[in-house]
Amino acid sequence: MCWRSTSAKLKTLHAVSATNLPFLALLGAAAVWIGWLIAKPYMTQWRYARLHRKPFPDAWRSILKERMPYFRMLPTDLQLQLKGHIQVFLSEKAFIGCRGLVVTDDMRVTIAAQACLLILNRKTDYFPGLRQILVYPGAFVVNRAQTDYAGVRTDTRQVLAGESWSEGQVILSWEDVLGGAADVSDGRNVVIHEFAHQLDQEKGAANGAPILAPHHATRWAQVMSAAYEQLQQSQSETPDPKPQLIDRYGATDPVEFFAVVSETFFEQARLLATDHPDLYRALSAFYCIDPLSW
Image (cartoon, rainbow, N blue to C red):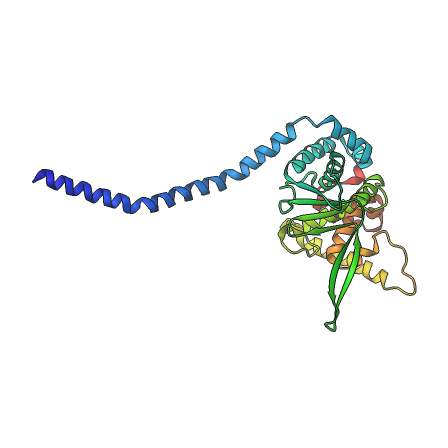
């Protein structure tokens, strides 16, 4: 009687255990997933730090000296920081040559160096939405469908030097990348322009306002709106608009304005600070650098 009772109890326990197996497995998987989510930021930062500590290749240093006059302008601490950022960037982003172009380290380092100027002194995830950089030998043609205010659709062809997509791609003309890197004072740099768009797109659709600290957002909106309206007004003057420090393409919309003034900030800082001091201060606070001090 005792043996039969014990056996029945064991059978009951086995049945209960078998019933709970799927739940226990699900619970274990959830615990692993939660643990991974908690650990992931620390693992990512550890990997970034490890890449920053790696010796910077001599060949890459030669590329910076040859292609990037801007690099020589940076203080020593920012040069070291930029080299670390380049190593992380190149470990994470894929480069794809288009129209028969074979991507070289020269191209990769030159593009990465200019892109990483935008994240100096900032806590960064290295343009987290970006997966690929597509590089064309020169300007490329894209087809665009435009609809006017009357609802009439027109197909157009545009020749571009660069483009940024929120789906994770930046497209660049290598010829224009070289031109932008070589002249550090003309206010034109396609890599800075397109990667400013990437910062703008980190929160979703670009609108000219990248992710900002709450205490900067209101002032940013005031300063950027005033400068944008001023540029638009200057371009509406007839019969011929006066030349402006900020490229007239910035009057297209707030999205392009942010990208254009980012080019001006990095390449014509002194002129921007003189002509538009509030705009300079807003961009300096956002990018966490002050080129006037170099």
